[in-house]
Amino acid sequence: MKTPNSAQLWNNIGMCFYGKSPQPRYIAAVACLKRALYLDPFEWIISYNLGLVHLNKSQYASAFHFFSASINLRPDNALSYMYLAITLGRLDDFDNACAAYDKSIEVDGKDYTARLNYAITLFLNDEFERSEAQFKTFEELLDAKLDEGEDVDEDVTLQRNLLGEALKKELA
Image (spheres, helix red, strand yellow):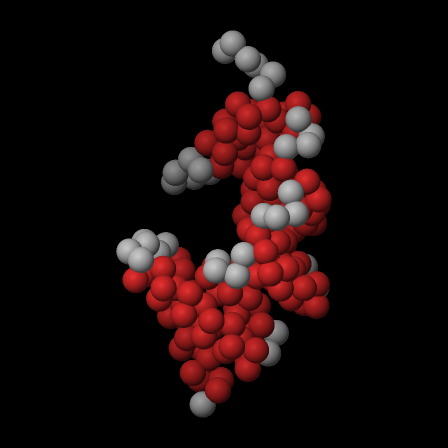
């Protein structure tokens, strides 16, 4: 290893551990990402990646901390706001979750995943009409991407079907 003190290298190694299939190595991922953060505390992607790892481990306070740091370092990344919103929703902070979703949409209005997650959060908080409005916008954006030939993640399709059915039952 010619550059053992490279933050980008440690970030990449950490994300390799995180993405390891079928069983992610969370402890190794966090250790590598923390080393990367120590080497370059102003690299937004490292904080973002630490937020993802902590969110997937249900460590919501830590995820909140790292997504907030990522946003402070790069406020034009819509995904950071979306994942912050998901984290806030898991922390039962509905109003701030909605504000973070709104900011994510303001930064990138064409991201259909933000609309889907927003619709799910609204649905889970009994805001069925608002959820339906976000869901309709999600479907329009998704259909446009599908028309362009873009592939859609299986989980997006699954969540789309589940939320669509749930909204039909609630609004019937």
